[in-house]
Structures are given as C-alpha cells and as structure tokens.
Image (cartoon, rainbow, N blue to C red):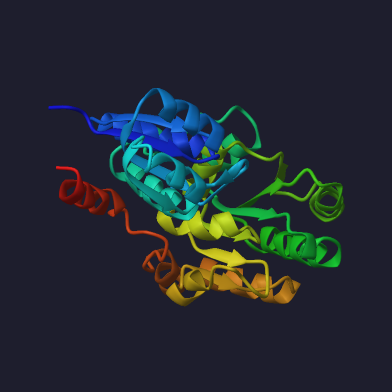
Length: 290
C-alpha cells in the first residue's frame, strides 16, 4: 500500500521536526519546510497527498501556498492551520506516542536547571518579555517571585530571562543572588518544553505559553491585564493576574497551597486541542482521498 505523502510547512523548526517525526513513525512519507519558498521548491519536484501549512510565514501566507499548490495539482488536499493547532496536538501526540521525546527525562547539562530538578522542590517557571511590562511592571513581578521564593522553602524559581537589556536589568536588580532563584538564558524549544513539563506553576506574559502549557496540564498565571487568548481564560487553563506584586503572590500562593484549586486549572479542558486532530484529519483524508 502506498504511503500517505505529507508536507508540513511551519517556521518553527523544532515543532516541524517533531510533527514530521511523528508522522513518519505512523507510516507516512512526511517532510517539512520552514518557508513558503522551501515548500514550493519541494512541491515543484514532487506532489503530495496532504499539505499542512501555517497561516503566517516569514515570506508569505499559507493561503498563498495553498492557492499555488492546488491548481497545479502539487497537493491533493491542503489546509491552512494555525501554529497553535500544531502545537497542542503535537504535544499531545508526543505525550501519547513519542515517548522518547517527552516521557523520558531530558538530559539537562549540569547547572541550575538540573540542580533544581534534582532537589525535588516545586518549580515555578517564569518568563516575561512584552514591551508593556518593561520597567516598573516587570520589577513588581520580580518582587513577587522573590517573595514566593522567600516564603516557600520547597520552591525553586527558574526565570528564563529575555536578552532585552530592559528585562535583564530588572531581573538582575531584584532577583540576582536570591536563594532558590536562578536567572537562565533563553532556552531552545525542546529543553523549554521539558521545563514546562517539570514545572508546577508558570508565570508568564507569553502568548505561546498560554497555548502550550495546557497540553501539559500546567496552570499559567498571565502577567497581563488582557490576553489575545480569551478562550484559555474561559476554559480555566490560564488566569489573568496582571503585574501587581501582591496580586501575583496571592494568586500563586492559592495554587501552591490549595490542591483543589490547582487541580481545577491543571485538569481544565484544553481549548487549543484535545490531541485527536490526527484522527479527524485521517477521517477527512479517508473520505476525500481513498
């Protein structure tokens, strides 16, 4: 039986590789492209049964690639999908099927991350990079992280610090030298996924983490007053807490102290995917291709 040929086009290299690897393991002839240009180059040399392309890429839109590929019969079926759909379902797929990717402990180099994990303490993972949080808002968040570290002896704060000087300055000024707080350089994608996996709680203003952490069952306290992911707020997987020091401390403490509150967030229904997208895609393919 001929293998189903698939081309994934997404500019997240680690994610594209994971999707491709999963599809190959399931018996597909799958390749990845990081740009529209690369995808067109591949499609000029071969046609595929299924083209999955992100809506927005550095050199064009997914719709443009679909509109180019279908009339030329370079793809039998083509869909524009959001990176968030890929993310949620790939994480779910990796958890279920690719155990060598996520289920095995990640081999972190000797250093603060490995030490924090080995200590057995609960880990609070923190990121902040948005422009509106530069200055006083970020300093308030850093003070909250300091209070949490000083209040909970069984807690270790890992702050992945953006390279922007504004973020670096605030982090070092308030959290530098604080016991059980480590300021980390930005992490590659796969190590960062493992950091999310081992964390108890996530504090972040990142949109991507609001999308990805629910797939791993990790509550996210969003360090903003608004979010472009209102579905996550409605589902209960994230909570808007802003940047007020007392508010951040209170909301984090509630989740750290109350197992019922924690489970309500960690087990809330993921609004960004349930891990069954591949089954639905397979059903569509069966109806349209077979």
